[in-house]
Length: 144
Image (cartoon, rainbow, N blue to C red; front, top):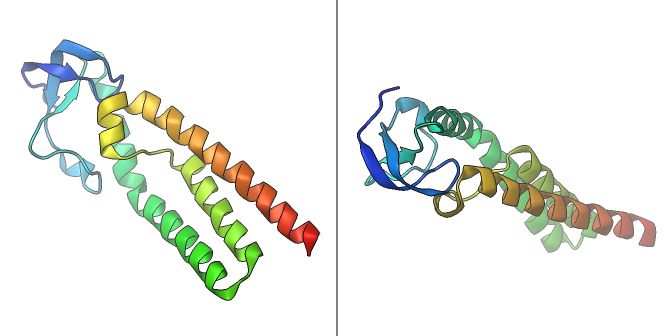
């Protein structure tokens, strides 16, 4: 991976503002990741390897993330249309598990918070969705 010139801005990994960020090239390995094409990918000199590994991991898992989201939405919508609460709760459980397994936020959230805090935020949301869905599923099954 090449190192670019020093620039100012936020590090994609830690989210801190620095004057000595490295502009990283857009690599083919990042396909599937929504990264800004109009601006360089920026990382602290000590975090460029973390940024690269994060973007490769997100790109590698992007299809599975999309699949989990689509399955969850189809279960929730299908369960809602059929009036089957267990299917709705199962869809929410799939959504929560998908967020926990693939804790990725939107590119804007990562840009503002940094990847580390965005992953933490996604995990908190994943736990909340999973616990709520598990409670709804348990209530639906026990109330039936």
